[in-house]
Image (cartoon, rainbow, N blue to C red; front, side, top):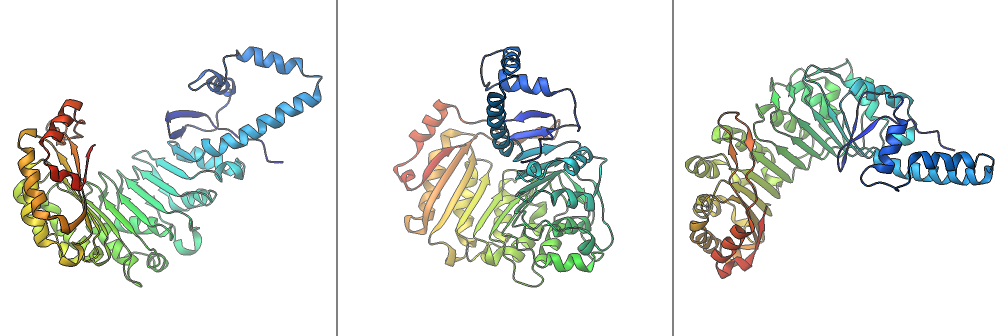
Amino acid sequence: MEDPVVAPAIVADCVDEIVLRSLPFSGLEDARMKEAFYGTPYIMRLPQELLDAIIDCLRKEKRALANCAATMRRWLYRARRHLFDNISIKHVHAFFAFLQTAPQSVAGNIKFLTLRLHEDHHLDLRTLASALAKMPALDQLWIRHASSMTIPDAVSTSVPRIAQLDILVIDRSVLSAVELATLISLFPSVTDLYIEADCTFTGAATDALQEGVRETLSKVKLTKLAVGARAHDHEAVLNVLRLTSSVDPLTVTSLELNFMSCAWLSTAQRALSVCGPGVEDLAVDLTFWDEDDAKHSLKGLGLSACKKLRRLRLDLSGPEQLQLVRDVLFDVLPRECQPGLRVDLAVSLLEIGNFRAQWDSTLSAYGVKDISAFRLWCRTASRIDDRSNAFKRGRLLEPEEQAQVLKLLPETHKLGTLKFA
């Protein structure tokens, strides 16, 4: 028989995310039970007191009580698989302490874990790895607000490796290149690495890496790399990327570059020079680049290295940049990749009135035989709030605006699909 459940306090943060707050909790069983019965969705409309009375009336009917207990146990174990497959942690030390005493069946169900660290939190790699090692089903790990790490001596021998993780996301963190490289080395099977918004890397040099870390990194086979907007000092990321290809050729096939301006053009060039030969899926965000910068950057980006490219996504600030795509894109793309290439344009519509001419000229530039799919994503403009410097995503087009766009499209729009997103 399985151990009884050691249930932490669970608060629904959103539909797919569960937040575990300070652990352990006590005295919340009734609150959780009432939430289960009267929350949304609720199990039944019967008062909890009536259910308690029914159980009490059966106190002499041992067979009936046993059947009730067996049924509830099966429900509990099945529900726990879903409750614990996606959790977000705010109090990391309490969570690690919880894992030391919780049944293996609890940690064994966790598939998606988010660690939300306090900005002054000092993350110990050995403690982190020991906790993650108790989660054999863990597939995705998000680390937010990591500001410093304790790296023990002889990491390769003293810290367990997490062999099953596929996706690692680092968000809003301040790390050195050595800390970043050492963190990635804990996950030799990771294939997708996301460096999200507002990450800062305080140093690009990796000379101080322990030899065991270098050896582990050389065995990492990344297939997707995404660098978010406002991530500072991308050179550290590229240096770590080079370490992963020190033995075998780089395996990155999907590359996503989101830069705030052409100031990061040299970084993008180096990223493509490192990853380009194998890249099949490339996304470049030009939303915040003015037309001259975007035109110059597309020419100098180094797309000629992407000879295996099969899908290209460009985020554009408005229809006027469609002219940029027409004038520049097919001049810089290698001829080998153009047949069968799928092009996705995410366009912010500033003025719907001039949309048809821009769209028509762009399609005629591509030619029917040049591409197998052409999709256009329409939304209102994205922008930066001048006062708060905060990124604000534009709203979706209203139905009447969508209808107006559809009327403006020529018959050639049937070559691809139109999506309002």
